[in-house]
Picture 1 (cartoon, rainbow, N blue to C red):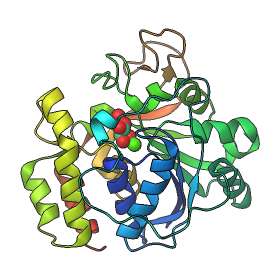
Picture 2 (picture 1 turned 180 degrees about the vertical axis):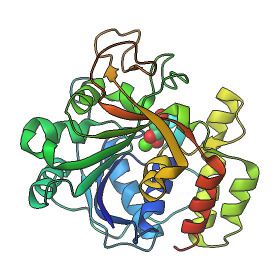
Picture 3 (picture 1 turned 135 degrees about the vertical axis):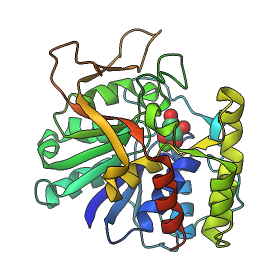
Length: 311
Ligand code: BDR
Ligand code: CA
């Protein structure tokens, strides 16, 4: 299995991404989950990550708390999407499993240093603060990263938090810039992909019909989370942004994209956090990311439902 660190700000869609990873031990070994401030403040994301591990029946998963604010800006949160707790929808018990003592950034650094080069993949599902902080403090770890598979940014779909920017990149553009300029191999799941991974009523019924704690909780998370996108975009259901990352590790063939140059806007307040993606190759700037453009949505939901059934 591929060894990964999930860096996350749960978030209902983060929760589903974590469940998918924990349900897939043949393909994915979760070395640890690092929480970051994003959808809701850090104390809640660190708590939610543990709620999700317990829901999955994997209380031995190690969860670390990381940065409580972006590198150079005030924290922007998204309770308007995810609710006050970040995980509104199902009623899930408070976690009993402990939060690890080590800081998430130290865990990321130590883990990469302790493993052979090219054997650990980072999976950021929130603002890139923890990853960038680790790269800043320990530049030697960058070349040890196998791949960074992240959810963030947009090209044709442009923004969901401002007209120009996607939430994860907008919250910490400085961190995103550090990561995109790092030289580590990057795979990006932008809104262009995730807005096609929509939980239609039939797909949500398939989760509920699993009849398990996990299936019902995921259906209830989606019931809550979808009101935002239904109202805002008139879409058919909730986009499962973050699970695209963990699905890619299991079935990369479900996604297609292009290797392109992506730069991050960090100066203009108007377009702050925009992923300036050179999809048409109009510059000679170096190709620094595999930027996905499409997904086999039904294949993705079939995979997800089949895996959630295992928990
Ligand atoms: C991203 O922002 C968060 O609200 C979601 O969890 C996802 O990671 C989508 O823009
Ligand atoms: Ca997220």
